[in-house]
Length: 256
Image (cartoon, rainbow, N blue to C red; front, side, top):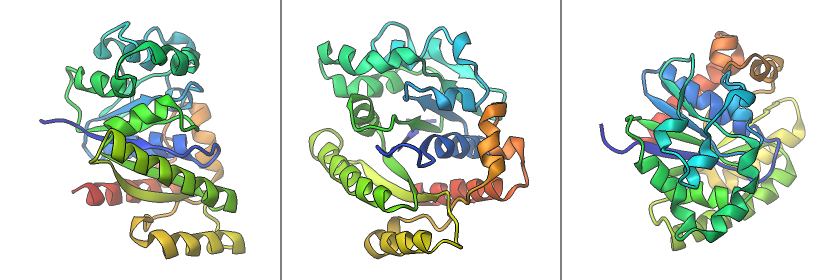
């Protein structure tokens, strides 16, 4: 097996389903038979608890690996979910933006971490923080592609423009091969006029980038993280579980 496909889930606007999408797409890839590593790069650590790992039990995390304080393998946790491993996050990561300032080639620290993994993964899924700081720059510098989860609101459209500018800069400065794998519409409600207007705008300007599959609003999807389970294991036959599975298959098609 060669180098893994590295996919960053990024959107600087919070509350758009970014972590939910990273967790569930990673779990779906595992369920489809692909070995996946979920890297929690958000100090809030929601991806960590979302796959059933208690943050208070974490001894080594993405923070220590980024700063070279432990080997990448030392921070890995095998989750109870099929083919899914985790590099967890703790609140220590909140200080990484400052700590990285003293490191040469600080934008490539995560790239070194992924190269240093001894276990071979087919996919590395990175849950970025809701910002465009050094952690997100690290993720985009080492990623092959970006998935942009996006809620159907006009503020989200404005944020998308800024993210596109950042991705363009990363391509120019650090990672010429970086591409946008797709825009994943979340919290979808076809009964709302605003939702349909935003979708129309997205398809008008980014037609080939918008995933065919949209993720509906769902109580079950909101409940799943409190049980530490991806939706396909919490409520296997729910509409959102099927949607995330379809989105994962579509993502595979976009990569191949």
